[in-house]
Length: 145
Image 1 (cartoon, one colour):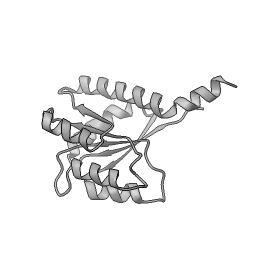
Image 2 (cartoon, rainbow, N blue to C red):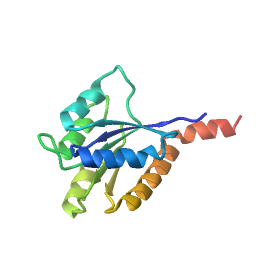
Image 3 (tube, rainbow, N blue to C red):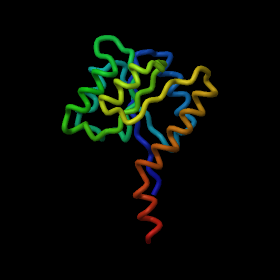
Image 4 (cartoon, rainbow, N blue to C red):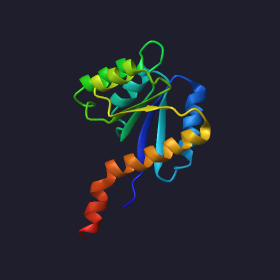
């Protein structure tokens, strides 16, 4: 059984969203990506029960109104959402930001690579890792048949 990894990408920058969508498009057979442009709409999306929760949330830090840390804090405070893996994807390599993300129980912290080819490689590794993590039991159950 082949599942598609469902992602929610939260970033206020339209150019960054477009680049990420292009990078993930190379994995269209394995990944579906939904997007939100701010923290409030992302939380509304996550709390909306008319669709399934994503397998992984990808969250930028620097956003207006509600920054990524505030969104992460809200996700971790919500009993219906706290189990979701949240990966911080940002340009910040500040130790303070990294420490704060992990203090708030981010699942991972990725610094966006500087050029598109390197970013695509980063996305390739991300997809491989999270497909392995989220669908491991499916492969194991198939191998025991």
